[in-house]
Length: 185
Picture 1 (cartoon, helix red, strand yellow):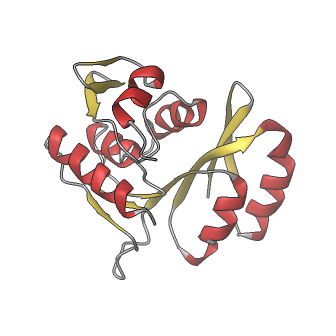
Picture 2 (cartoon, helix red, strand yellow):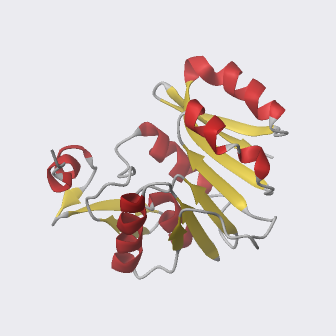
């Protein structure tokens, strides 16, 4: 059974009209087409990520792990990031993200793996549940900052214990609904 992505996005994506989600990013609008990649701003964790990113991404290199629709990588570029790479294990999500980049005239790179020569001054974005974050093994990647969401409030201590094992220190925490997000170094 195939999913009718247009129908799904029409039901759940905020500001969905003319066949696209219209995502406010500061003074600009990011357009997203319906597709297989998660990220249409309907989920509180995506909203948290967009809010937390604003102060940190301008002028930076950004890597979005689990990019889905490309929303975070593309939003980072609209916020002034100098470059953005989106990583996802789902080939349909990668195609979806590339389509969204083209629609917005943004030059983000999308693929299954992180380039071998990435800069350690990178800001990493990761919006996924804790079990998926553990599977990514983020401690393998050296970056100057991690912006992370997908953690339920009742998992906060569990996440912070895990983050400490990964060598991260919390800079700040934000909350929306029953979800929380973190900025970590």
